[in-house]
Image 1 (cartoon, rainbow, N blue to C red):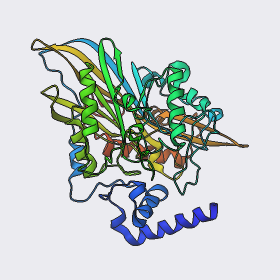
Image 2 (image 1 turned 60 degrees about the vertical axis):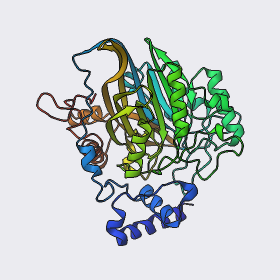
Image 3 (image 1 turned 90 degrees about the horizontal axis):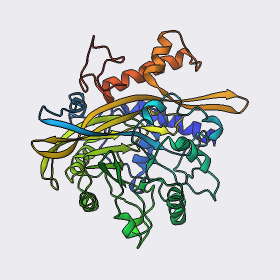
Length: 458
């Protein structure tokens, strides 16, 4: 396996050299394993093990579009706040052969004060949880999509003794990895533990039973969809079990989303959050098709999109749209990809950079009407730290990127980073502030430095 992988990686390096500019930019493809041709599979391999793509599609103005985003949310003088709710969101909780209970004892230590302070703490559960089967993780050298399964003990890490993640999306490309029974077992497991979820279902009625989480009088509805099932089709006659919409294509039918938003509003939801598994892997920018799809999803009446799947962080967008159900102009938030949360890609350097966000929702009175709107956004850049300790031991931990760099600047290096690793941390910081969250997005205070002076950076 190692020799085969080494040969493939060398071949992809040479291919990238000869193709040059053609392998430097995002391409307008679907990225759906079921429909990939050989060229797309080679392109995926190149992005995965050689070099992640940091340049958007040529000639589309995508980089400039995100660079000019203003991610501050203004309430206006006429809005009188009454109640607030905080949603904190992280990316994908996957299964890996290199991540297990024994090396994640301090998994959350660096970010728990921020991430677990939300009233609703959500993430994408990107693997079935079937306790009767052995755990199966993504290997360090991955040549194809494995059929993964998360252990009960790793799930215990996610929920952190009841103080951690408390809402799970289950619609993703691994939803059917353990088959129909595995999907049912996962839902039974979550229900037995008392954790709400959305994205997969046992029945048509359950698919349409949109979960509402009420905190401080504010009702937030969650919906979830995946663009792919890793080459599988939805179960014939039971398509309701997996919320599948080919979200990376521009003209897909969104009637399922429209139906679910309508149900959520009929259940008096003040805010609708869509957790989407979409976009292209190992690419810093979403392609034009995905951006257009994000706008279409919002125009169904969705207030917030929390995106995942690309294994890297992607930019955010404040999008003004007309809500056809509430019949008013609104400002929504699209996070195209939060990146990883508990996952590991050894050969993808940019996959070590991700983010956790905190979204403030406020109920207030404006011109005599009571409404709920997004009033603030806070962002925590994170670094996925994995270290081999020798004698078969390792450590996996999520680090606060800016705190880590501040410590290094003050000659504190508790994680034993080498000079090369420190250089890489600084590169990832530049990537984040140049492409994921440009300095104009949140406004600057004080002397305008990026360390702690961006209004939305924690």
